[in-house]
Length: 164
Image (cartoon, rainbow, N blue to C red; front, side):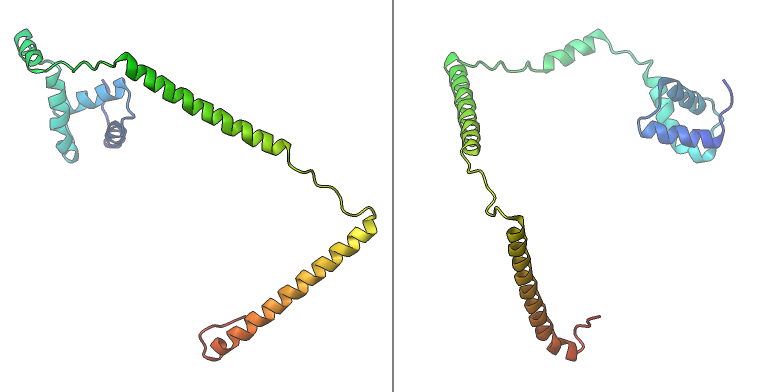
């Protein structure tokens, strides 16, 4: 296997601890750390890769496995009676029916809404009315702006607020 440089080891370690390495890259790391020629800055990772390499050769005896299985209690069996199943099914049916009713009511309300119609037959008259309404709104907004400026004036005199 070719020699691995320091930068490549750093990259492989970063990818390894972010769980982004493939089997080939992990094998390269294990080979590097078991080679004995490890850069001193990577010495902290040596035990991790050497131990994982040696752990693969450990076999568990059948006796240990049997003793372990004897100590593990089986999962409790949960029995659900037919009445409980029917109660759950009835609850679900009630929820579905209520949802269907709400949706159908909403659809029927939308169908019975009043359709808006034009209030003016003459476009010029409609234009005049809109212009008058906008002029009224503009003057009202101007009055509001003037009132705001007047109420801020005392604070400006105290140099609390500066207006541009």
